[in-house]
Every structure is written in structure tokens, then in C-alpha cells.
Image (cartoon, rainbow, N blue to C red; front, side, top):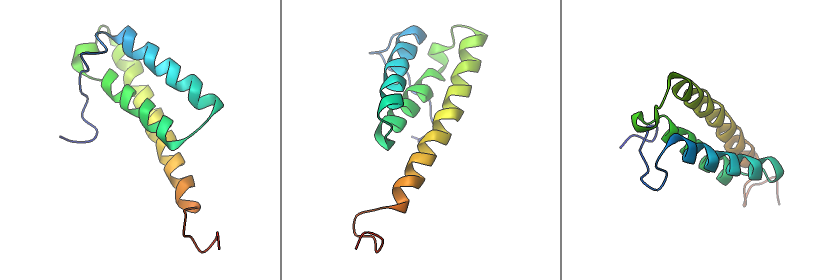
Length: 92
């Protein structure tokens, strides 16, 4: 399985459920940004691109935009973590 592959999640039966979950994660990320929350939001946005959630053209377009945005945010979070890692000469 490719990491970017959209996977339907039976626990999230429709686009509304995925978007509601994504909103909760996004709100949490806004108050406590972390790579883990960015990855979770990215995973949810990828799920939203699954064909089973394509309830309308708007949902499909929004899903693609959210996925691109969360990919960029997750990349930024990982880049920031790479700057300061345990055992780094910068911390000694």
C-alpha cells in the first residue's frame, strides 16, 4: 500500500464524519501544534479523498485541497523536529 493512498474507514461512514473528525484534530492542532497531530490530520484528509467519500464535486475538491495543505504542514513540523533532535550536538 502506498502511503498516499486514500483508504475508506468504516468507522467514518461518510464525508461528514471525516470532516467532523478533521475539525476536532484541527482545533487541537491550533492550540497545541505537533507533528503527531499534523500526521493525524493528514491521514484524515487522505481518507477524505477516497472515492467512497466523494459525495459531491465540492467534497472532492475540498478533500484534495485539505490533503495538500496538511501535507505541507506535516512536512514543516517534521522539518522543525529535525532541527532539534535528542542527541544533537546543538543540545549538548
